[in-house]
Length: 185
Image (cartoon, rainbow, N blue to C red; front, side):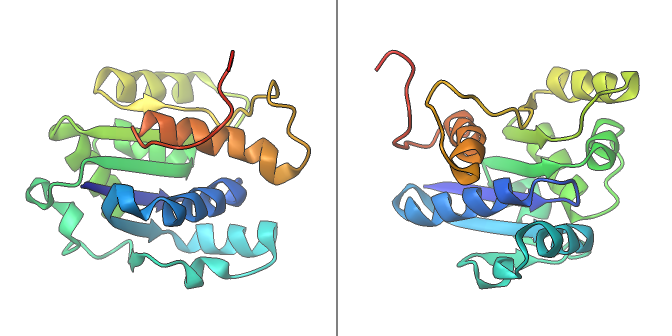
């Protein structure tokens, strides 16, 4: 069974994190553990963008950014996937630089060193050269950069449906079996 880490940073895009957590709760037969780390900035952005604190009601175990005793702070925890959604450029830069200063960057470092799946859902635009080089570094280290760029060929009608095109792509990248729009189907 899959063991998944979800990290939520303070970049704009709380809708993506909310939808991901909801979709993971709906496919609980595909994982044995989902652990969440959420920055204080992420909580503030969530409250601003979604006008609620529903993150506190999610059916997952939440860890503090400073909890280096979390099971996924070590490769022996055997977590196989980490999704950072949304991934701030600051977090991306710290991961690319190998600066494990909190639980998110430590967990990402562990995932990369163990050759497991790291998916960074970057939301900021435009990119400067530093961002691009950090994305290159993470890609060369085995991570996946998945910009939060929605698709429109499924003809989404609501903001949630637009955002779900990104979240469904992330779930596909994570190797989870989901029902979603498939091109050519």
